[in-house]
Length: 460
Image 1 (tube, rainbow, N blue to C red):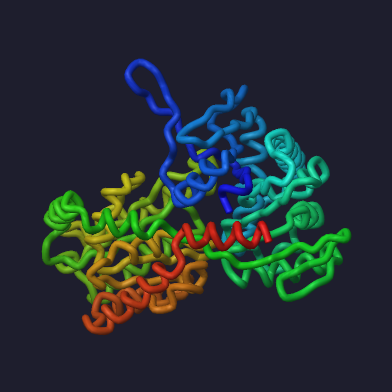
Image 2 (image 1 turned 180 degrees about the vertical axis):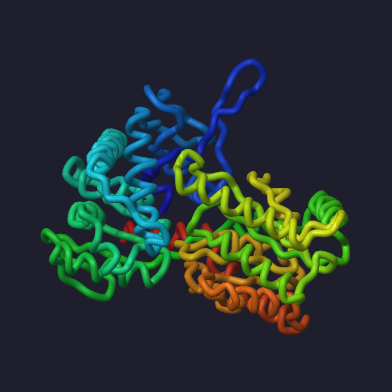
């Protein structure tokens, strides 16, 4: 497929970064499952990737890196504030995550969103050749499919939403609901993480745009638009190799010594985002300590919180709340040399992250709402000896596949505490049975399987 047809990927941001080497800077490919899966296809098909490269003002010139042609899109400081920080992350993000924070509907953010989407569509139109597949990604660019169709009706267009699509009664609050649905319907294929996202979109499209259809196909303007669920995944083999590497074993030994050899380790790894449920998770840990089901001597909770959107007020407030809870728990329950909570406000290199996955007796993936959540799959991929327990929110997209996890409602602090307690005391045989089932599920659908299935559907 890759050798016969050309693929053009369009995403908000390019999967590259500038690094300093000696006295100059160079481009380097960023780590991530999406670029890992698509780079070989793009390289073999002489494809291209369009997106923002960071910074404001004039965009860098197009460049080729590891056989892939990258075309940066320029964004002004004002567009970053209104399109990205405003409409994308203060209107769309909270609305699509079950309105766990109230979305803000501001007209002054909408028009920059339109303008930036048009800029991406024009870049794709200038890059694509007749018969190419243009694959547009995520909530930042929902107007691009229809805009691109107007400019280039001779290309195939696909769209994939990485976050949840909200139920119709929530999406109905959006003042620009018709424009967004019509923008998405410009694609030949629209992909979602879960069947729930498909159902929500189909219902909304019928009501808002008056389209007809069922069983994954909608009819609009004389065209058929396919709609389907394509759950994204991870590079299982890469995590398996890292988990088995001798240097990882050495890192794991040092980490367990620092945390306490005889302490049970509970782990959370998230972006510091209000959709991730970190505050509720800390309250559940506090409940375990209050009730005596856990003590600082026998249990430690490690929370890795990767900084995110710190210029946005809600995120700054969340950081203050999380750090206040960490301080209160450690102040109330800690003992000299024994802090019940270790809080890391930073990202970890992948090799170090894998050692944390291996150190964790219990992994907490408890978002209030998530499109997929690949941390759950990464943890499972690293548990090569079938040990460990995954406590998973029923509102994460991963719950559709990882059915052997301990499912919890993250809004229920008492229930969450009970789930953690059950994971800590799970019999070895049951834990191994659950982990084998989880590993089979991840092995059945890797990021390469996801890309093959989606692109096969997009070309058919």
